[in-house]
Image (cartoon, rainbow, N blue to C red; front, side, top):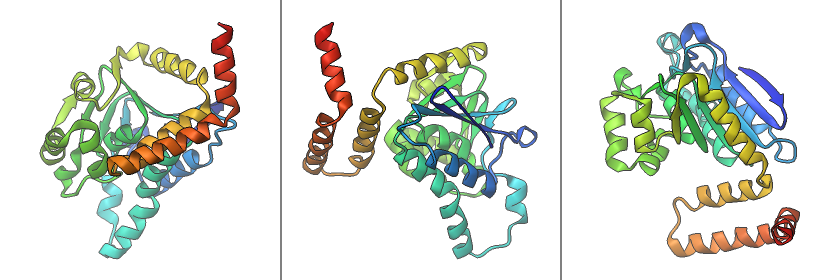
Length: 248
């Protein structure tokens, strides 16, 4: 992974272009560490992107072929690698933005789904490819895709492992928007500028409330929402925002 910090944004670039940025265990750990170490007092967002022509081709098949492990060893490995990536992204106090510069396959698609925002180049394509190699969607796929896309669409992508275009990915809600390849950088920069104008603390509280309420009964969810709002009322960002609005 290449990790770069500039103007309050951490950019994490998957840098194995010779393997279409396929994930190894080490790469997944590095990604989780890069997200986990972001402090909301210093950063406004994290951007994920790929080096070369792909975003990520998912798990490294050569590494899979070389593994000889028990189911328990497999569970421990994936929990400490791809499982940590999902937890880091869902609990990060700053927005995670996927800048999908090329194909996003398997875990690459799942990382797109777990991000808070996703912008894709027109040339990108997507596949929940796990079924092609006899695997169940991981990296949060079975949890996130039904909630993001709806049950039938999630099943279609997971069970057929078909490729879809960037345009269809936007249509079904996998990404926010698609843009011409040479405009992807500018589109993400525009989003980052908007996020910089918003109070990072409030964005973190909003993200936390949405994620933690995903599995709650509505009354419990409402209670949690009001609790989160009471915290937001006490922040300097709220006071400053009200004062600025009244001045205008």
